[in-house]
Image (cartoon, rainbow, N blue to C red):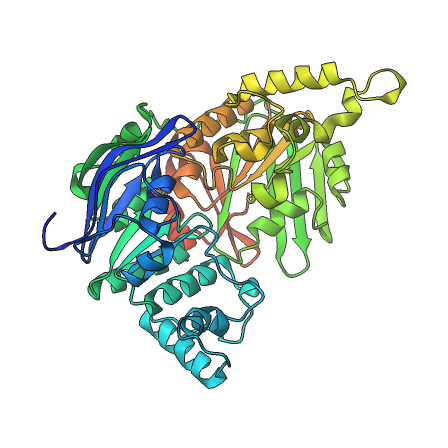
Length: 504
């Protein structure tokens, strides 16, 4: 440990029910350094963060903060020592205003019995000024977009004289423009001597923001070094022990029937005049910045927000998609971006989550559910999608993010859909699960399924789609396909410097 080291871990061990979550992990974080912690789900990242935060007590090893060894860590002591952790849920009070969320910890720390509202607004204004952000202080946090919630969490962390900010998957729900804004703020923090530990599955972002990379696998540190020594392929191999080829998807529509035809579709003021077709075996991408209408379009195709203009045809037959039931009957399935709140019954079993959409197909005599049929269906999809579980009767919340996403896929593929719409298909899943899901999508396309992928993950679109529509303010402003489909071309289109014609 050197004088410029702010955080030092030495041979940290942690066991959970016989699982060696951390196996003699040692690492340093220097003052004013931006460091990345990379690893798959189950690699030990979350456990390590909780050890540093004082939430989990290690079974062995030492932790030193600012040169002081801490034999016992408690969350409040860690905060006073200058370490702040911003978790994925941000730990904000949704029913309180921006100002109240920012100032409340300070007021509580000062043991104030009465709230001084002028002081609350002053504290909040100073906090946002530190990161160069203007925001309505009276706005309830629950009404803020995800990116602004994250900025509130960062501003609150800096109020406590943070010297190390740990950001756990900070870009999961952000668009490219919002990610760039976040990175500017992290760089601004660094200029003030504040360290940042960036935890992410998004390897391109890891390489963009980090100065040094630490890779965990199966609870052990397997690599560490300056960012110049790494590329995406190397990090992925170190994280998983697997080599990823990264083949692109090609498609020839000749002789392939159209499974979906959308003409002049519109929904209120969210999108309008959207037209495209989709062939059997094709993977079509749709992208756009926040507010482009891409999610509303997905929800309209699935009947959640029924379109009020235009038509939808499935297999050449016009269908009125005005409810989820009508979408399923028409042969359209939808995998939502937020699988936790929209796609799964977390406390229910894997079996129930997989079978709930097709119970009418699983009846036996007397109209009762035939549990033998249910079990056969579940076994088939567990095997087909490679879902890792010792028991399908376990609650689905016991699975990793990647396996949860596979369960959602199985649920809708069981409906024998002709068209599969996926909104953010790999949001929050690790690199190995991401590659497996991408491979499965290509396999499903090869079997004749028409697939629509809605995403702002540009490499995901380039590697898995033969054609991508770009939405801006509710309208299709460009189509990129074939050899022209590159990260650079999509970036130009999204920044307003690319295509301005076309429409699919």
